Every structure is written in C-alpha cells, then in structure tokens.
Length: 141
Image (cartoon, rainbow, N blue to C red; front, side):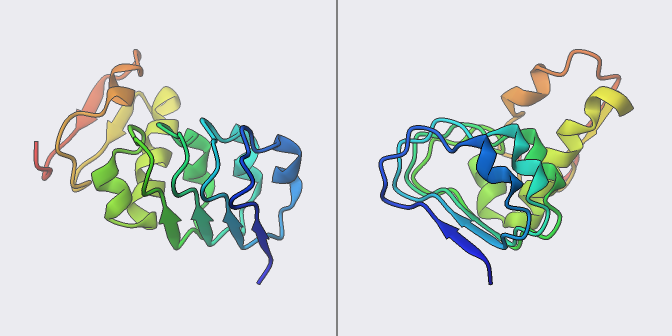
C-alpha cells in the first residue's frame, strides 16, 4: 500500500500540495495540532484509510464525501462536529455518505440524513440555507 504517515510531527497544517499524491491509499496524521484539512483532499480518490486521531479538528471538509473507497476513518481525540462523533464511530462508509449528502445539498436543495445514528441535528444542516427538504428519519433524535 502507498502510505503517507505524518503522525507525531506537531503539524499545524497539512499542506494542500500533498493532496496531489493521488496514489495514496493511507494517510495518517495522528497526534498533531491540525485544526483543518484542505478541501483538495478530494483528489485523493484511492484513500482507504484516513487517520487524524488526537488533533484539534472539529470538522472534516465536506469534500471527504468524494472519497468513496475510504474503509477506515479514525477521528478519536478530536471534538468532531462534522461529521458528528456518532456518525464517525459508525464507520467510514456512513461518515463519507453523511459528508457527500451535505456537500450535494447546494445543488439538490435537499439533505438526506436518515439512518445516520444522529443524536441531534448537526450544525452543518443549519448552514445550508437553500434546503427545501431534510430527511432525519430513523435516527436517535
């Protein structure tokens, strides 16, 4: 596998220029000081593992919703809001689906978040001002 491991380096930012490493299958950024990831991460379409444990992240870019091959998403040790922690804990597939559904809301004018294990309506939903339909059925709200 093609792995880039930038763990334990005290990184404040993950440079967007590394997002052009499109053959990567694993990106490990654990135990840094990252507050965000670049939107260009969407270019890393072969990623199967994204590990960002113990950083200062609250949001993953919605563009992570393009990473359909993602099998493992590690976000423990962050104060995650988007996707919410309960979605992250439910697995990479659900987290990617959540992000993709919110990402496409601007075009579709709807957000489908049914069966996402949500405990509350995520803040990111309120940021989507043009929404005409919101499906939150079959959650824990």
